[in-house]
Image 1 (cartoon, rainbow, N blue to C red):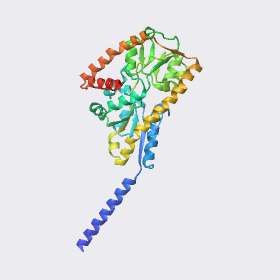
Image 2: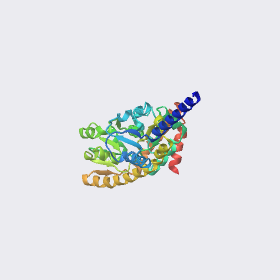
Image 3: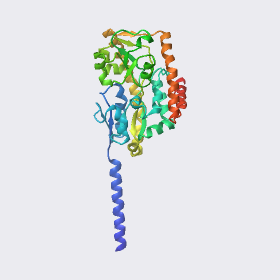
Image 4: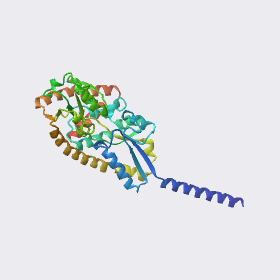
Length: 338
């Protein structure tokens, strides 16, 4: 009788464990993503990622997108990831360069990135570097994919700049390496948020803003601009999508695979979306009579000359902080050259 009772107990425990395991496996996984602004080209890869993941898991792995800073302020998304307030988020390295110094190498001016495909390639190479993974690991963050941004150019109000000297004393909305570059040519960079930029230019608080075309459209800068620097192409900001490490590790293997294998289709969709943005951008400039400023080769060389010391200063500063800065910069330039 005692043996039978033990056997029955063991069988019951095994059955219970089996049921629990089955229920756990079958349970839907729901992730939240913290974004800011509204749905736009800049977020289309996250939209596509969610769509792909749901399709690959028969709807059992759902990624919910939250816009407008509903979950967190844009500059606090990395903090939210660190303590698991949400499972995924987008942020820009320049929002808090001290928190993600390795990523700021991609925000250095005049690196020579010519298109979004190259930026994707460079970002992936950088993400694979152990120092970068360790850097983001401090925030319990795993780099999932970049948000490849076109080169920033300035849209502004008032007198049209024709030379590097015309930026002297000009207050501009410029972040990261772009801000450092503009400071080097005598401009006064400010950190006005994207959503405040329209009002800042309209009121004269700043004269110009450095954005990718989609943002000039999304944040209505184009509605108050008189001119746009068509060929300055000084650099851009780097805005990755990251996931909480614990949340990622807790996923069943097939859900991890679904997420990982959704990245490339998401980025392909993003690039296609940007092609459509440019189809709208050029007619918008023409219709509004916005002057498209094309700097001479000599003026572009004068801008680029200012970038060398900025890159060297970045290497010196980050090396002093214990990072393999020169190695990271060399990796970026080598990947671009290839």
